[in-house]
Amino acid sequence: MNNQSFSGKDAIKTYLADNAGLREDLTMKLSEKLFHVQEQVYTEYADVDPIVPDLTDEEASASA
Image 1 (cartoon, rainbow, N blue to C red):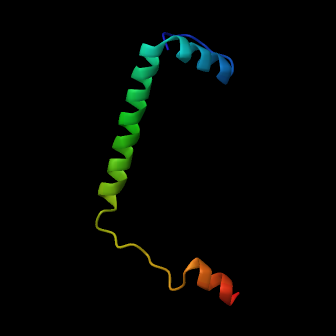
Image 2 (image 1 turned 135 degrees about the vertical axis):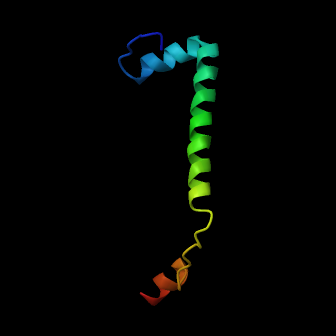
């Protein structure tokens, strides 16, 4: 963030609270990256069949 250094999470929280434009830009960039990663995972595993257990959690705990 403009080559600034912050010590502790409270310092970065205060900085972002005081700089709404920067906070919104950072939020948008992070959201785009997270969405892109999530999209890659869905695409990568789109053809994989889900594994369905023989027992539900309730059935497994009742039989234990």
